[in-house]
Image 1: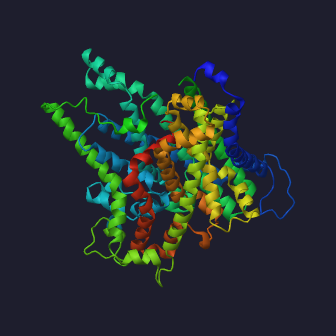
Image 2: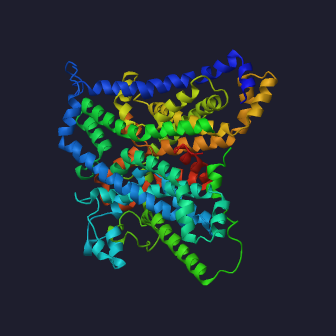
Image 3: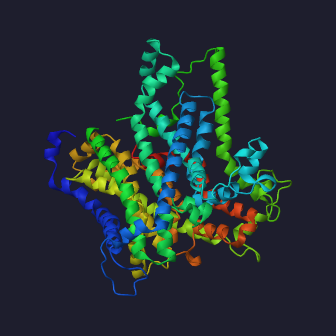
Length: 303
Length: 305
């Protein structure tokens, strides 16, 4: 919009817009920011049993208790393991998918549609299948993935999957990778196809080999895409909840922060603890997302 | 304006593939690519394949050891059991499915209307500080809802709306505001400002420009938002479990399914698979027919496009 028209805009034009979004602004301010503050407030009190006793402020006691709480540190370390394997796995898988498709290939639409469908299904539903496929029975009793591994001669890879403490979170990352690789594919594909053809042609004319073109011309162009993907996968991973519940319920072995919050709130009725876990989770996610939002806001300004 | 992201993804990359004879090395790579694509396809389809074939084996003959085997003969009995229940399998999902459909349609429509109005203002009637407000909205899209859940449950209990399914309509409308606003704003940004200016010159009001110019152009964005809100509310488990407290009278598709498959019914694998499949069907069907619009909604969540 040019400056002259901006100056001509009447008072109603400048404020009228605000009038129409005001209800939404108030709603967001109350239900997002207001309720976050409310949660913070609860987390600083002693509301540990449904609120029968007098409410007192206890400072950061609930937070310091969390650090000492073995179940919380366990769920946090589970979340870290899960996040690392999930992000790496989805990133690599999605990138390979994108590499295979980016030049265009007959039947691309077919493959792409199938690669993207997992994101349309709820994890509570897929959990039923994964709970079954990733069954820990082995050898003669084996079924699901363990059986399939035997059949193709990879019997030594048979595993307890999500059942035993050691590899549970890595096994949990498999269904998550299964669901989110398509997302990574879509973002990388858009990234590849947003690179002007001239860049490739120019490198080719200069005598660069195909692998050199990828390494030195195309991959550097994908850095912003990579950043976006890391942020998106990171915040999804930290929120992991129904994926875990769908496959293994509230079991201790696969408990992550979001699940532990649910348990503290629902089963133990410890609202102070529940809110403090939730606020820790919020801070973890904010650390990842807020810089991204600011970066994105600046990008918008240059548009 | 940059090229639309979904168009980029679905663009036919034909320019670089001029028809000509491939040499040996190129042929090898082409075959290699097809084998890899087929292998990944196989992995992606496998869970759904397991769901489908095991839903066709009846109620009794479903074991983990034959999970990948096709049924010897088609038996649809698990479908009727999962849908309406029997004496040995009392839970059914038909009622929860109906309830989910009822609230999801309402929350999607309300969300779309709100998103359209907000998006129009944020794209074409910017006010002082509107970009900042918009960023505040976006943050609301990324928060873990656990951070607002306990107060939200208290509000719902105090207002006594936690005994009706409208509590979920409320939750999905409120927490859908950011993403719906974002999708519409991005869509309206692409509409040339000249169109609005022309309207202003004719002294048309903001509302009239919206009604007569913007709204008729908004159908694709409405489809994107409706599909997005439909899918995410249908698949939502977090709000449902917290706000309805797992009460059977308010069970929705996901909470009912979680109850069925998590309870002692684990022996009835066939029925569990069928119930999961039935719950997945509505969103799958939407994806199959309107995948492009679904993809656009999905990518909006990354703030791209």
